[in-house]
Image 1: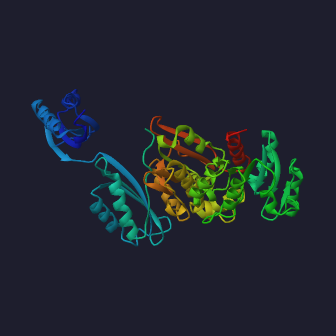
Image 2: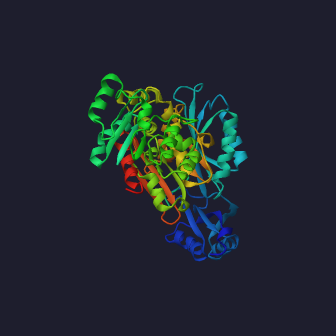
Image 3: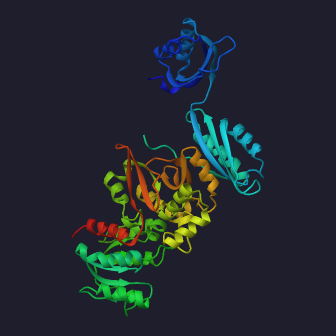
Length: 175
Length: 316
């Protein structure tokens, strides 16, 4: 595809009527319009006040195709709650080691979030020796495709200022 | 072939001991204090027995081994940094005499690669050093076969001691000091483990790889970004483990240079070898990724790579 470099990741939030076949009906316009499905989050047990089922769909498409997808969904009478906001399609996990608590962990995290533009999806701290000793933290961040190197550079710098070490992920080679 | 072996440590001794099985004759063997020389072949067993008992291999001066009669000089003295002496002088002196050189000592090809290559150009002799990267594993010969031009990156676990420590810490939830002491008891780690746990040994191997991959642009240890595993708390391994990952000391050679440090990797991939095992991944332009795994250290293992090199020498 010649337009492949212009592909973005999108998240669409839908509300589906609790009826067999509805999910398939919602996904069809995406597939038919050439969107690439990344993930589907289907909360079967969590109903909206109207009794509908919220579904979150992550997909990749060019901006033009994304517009067509949203139009096709609406034309099929599917409730689109939110669409469009450029979202994240890649994940990076790093482990930070050092005096994390003493060097103000929440400050470190917000600095990382600000400087890198990544969103921290989850976070775990392990401080078996107590909060004043060295501890480790695992950060899972969501980012746009192709931004990993930039984000790692930002983390390296912030960690360097606080004398923390960063255990970085190894780039994928098993293609 | 007639071999002169410099260095009578684990590798040198194994080369001397196994040479006859590969059809070679040892005409000289030296350690740092002494040498034994005989153009018809030395008595290897008694030289090694004497090394055990008295700490010397014979009554000759070490320099006599260098000037002895031989086809191939096997340089297996301890790796030294910076000037890489006395290994570097041994290499150039053999080349000046138009003899072949097979290195197990990383120093000369890591720290003075350009000078070694220059000396080789002026000589009838050839320099090979498979044993310097990954012990028994055929890493450099694979790179040569595939052509350095067609290789985009090399990465892997290149130090068995560090890998043993990290895989044991991960599996048992034990601390660094505890596992290090255990490794020392088992003979997996040396009394002074710095070379291994600070990443220096892995970095030297990566520097050699970088030199081979980028003919012309010389790299030394100073150009490498190196981080060790001494300060790695077991809590970091626990957190990695909770997420289906682990931490290993990984050496990487790419367009971005040479980098060695603890890295997060998926728990069940080719790279996550356990114990003292090593692995090298070669990323090729036309053939995807090759994994070469095996024993990266040890006397007979490293000697095997030395014999493989001797077999590759021209004009036999």
